[in-house]
Image (cartoon, rainbow over all chains, first blue to last red; front, side, top):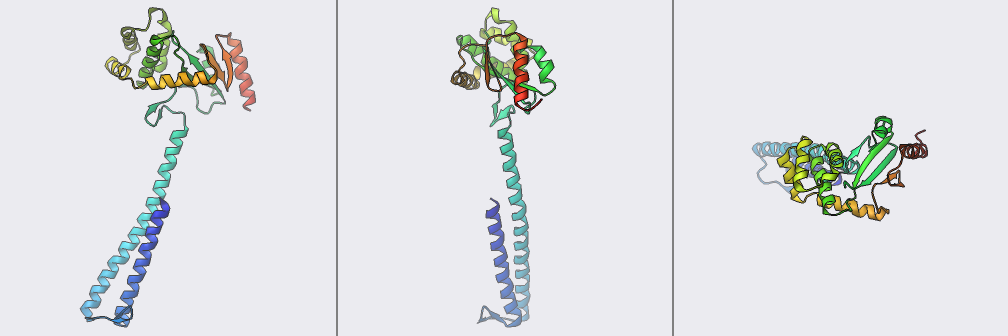
Length: 116
Length: 140
């Protein structure tokens, strides 16, 4: 789960790096990946700047959210494992065995009985 | 279960007592076990369990089981619904099958940390077995 989110985050960073390069080309060489950029007046520069800022911001937000989401999902799966391992009353929504005493007691007496 | 064991060993955290159904005396035994599970849903398994033992000789008809539920302070309507749903029969039957697999062929049969103890025994036998199990578990 975490790996999936991290890959997504890495992809976002690579995308933002590409966009930064494009913006750099626009500003300094008026070229887009080696090709001449059509319509490179000041208004176009401003447009590129706005778009690139948006992309960088989106990439950063995605990366941060991906990190938080990954950790959260790992934590919840651990909680589920603990629940299943305990001898509590509810296991997968079902009743456990009726019991008296601590689940950590060193001695367990199991009583097989009939009410009649 | 003997109250002395509860006072001596359960309260101080040495002993845990786990109940398993082994209804081998016919349908009324099965019904009583299912009814006790329906009481467990309402958090009153042990109260109902004690009432069942005290009422053994009046039989476990559906009416008697519901009457005992009222005595135990259960929500009778919910109890009846749970009891008749068939939802808990699987749990009771599963306990029975596990008991057979473990070598149980009569009741009561106890396992103290896996060691079998068959039939009603003097309290001293349980105390000795619990003390032995505690020593083996490294609890002094």
